[in-house]
Length: 144
Image (cartoon, rainbow, N blue to C red; front, side):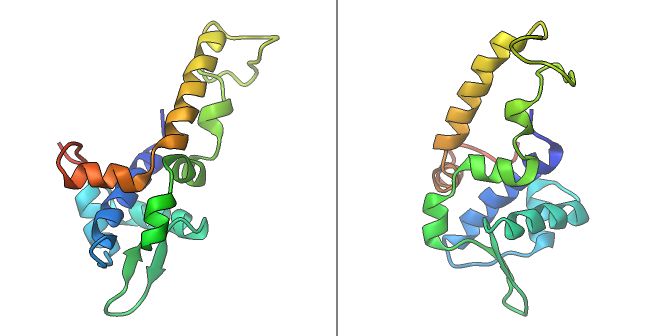
């Protein structure tokens, strides 16, 4: 459903949140290793998140990626998805057709509308802080 970049971005930001809660900054090498992604690809994804003001970075010996506590509590999953994948998951055809709308629907168009609405609702209400908390409490996992 999401691009590989978006999947990595979600995992990366959740890992960064778990570190940021302890006032730690984390570097690309550690993030990439933790989420199972290539370093260069991870760097590009994180750059998008920084550019969209969803993530902070600093350089130097104590540098790395981090989120401020107020951002952790406010940041919603939909913001991460939009920063990386845009709105394609909400507007594109479920079968990948170039032209698909209510007037000229594909075979799954009307059912997919409901799925899209549910997806938007889920992403709009899920806060990354809560998701990271679930990971820390071991009620959810980033690695299997």
